[in-house]
Image (cartoon, rainbow, N blue to C red):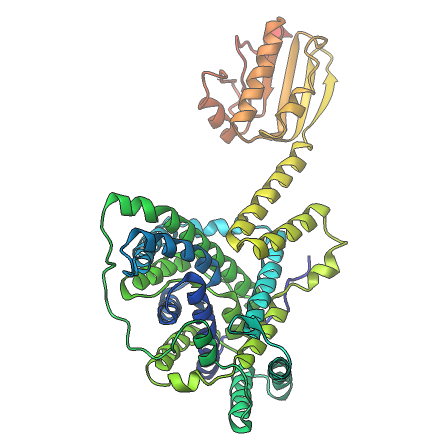
Length: 529
């Protein structure tokens, strides 16, 4: 199968590249963090604090240098329900929902850290390529659709001159981004494009939406604030609180880990390097826990900003650290300048991210891969857009597993022959598991078979308890009509499975330690000859 994306040349990066790409990412983080804060129903500064803390902590302790974490839409859509229900539990005007969000993040952090310590990150290997392609395609569409909201002002779509100005500035940003690499490959195209368009808008006096006008139009007042402070969530520490937050914590922890590990895999593929999933799980947990006690909205890995970082030359941990520190610097000292950045410049950068994220090779291979894979790609893409990536990825893995099980269930075969002693041999081929037991049982002609029957598993494999039960059932059916059945060449791990089910099947070992026979009322095969 062709690669999903154009590879980014393998490189260790440099301090200069990490600093410049980190600054670019910091600028792109501002509107994203603000937008997702509004989605979650919390103050923009809570989203910015969350992005700052997630970025720095995961950059230092995470398992994927160059990957950027921050406030994300996937988690925000869950948080909004938590905040609303939390507000209903508190007194009017107490903003209790925000406090319930913070204590939930503490539990999210613990769950994610435990998952990493238990080495559950390795299960991301179970995600098939078709699911990965559907995931990146769906995410590219989601990023594109999220940027369309930037073409609104006070909830209404732009039209007339404001619309054309917005479109023109977006196109200019994209053009700069596409041209810069041809002039100088290591130049920070995204940063140059953002600064260039911002200077043009300022000096030409172009009337267009900026970061500040975007925040104000959504009910905010700006991004200027002080340092986040330590604050224990002000909620009752009772069993009722735990029961309320636990389901949200489980969902948020799962979404955060799935998105982070999927992004890690994608960045691995783009850079032709290898990250560490379990370490990333622990870092995500630590970052969310810190968010819970310092007033941030938490989050996870961000595929859009991660791709901006990688394509801008960011390879090391320094890029993520710079992004977080720069974001905090913006909040503390340069808010008025960041608020003046045109939204169009940031939208243009994200549109380039969409183009780089989408797996365009999907259209080339659509007629070359199995139809089942095509179905999975389309399914995961659609579910990512309609619901969220956690549901999409889990559904894709389940469907892929069912398709795999069905295909392997049909592979069970039996070659039959009667030897010179009148003993009938069934030589089994293919895996014997829950999906193939019915087809396996249909291979035997119990009524018409001779008195001695041998089933040889040398070319097969007993996979699960269902396989053991069907073997026992076949043996019982032969014994009920007065015939003897013998099982040969069961592998050691299969013997272990059968020994765990002694009430179901007796296990007997002949002189040859590699030759096993399981049959009720056992007698040696040679005694019947």
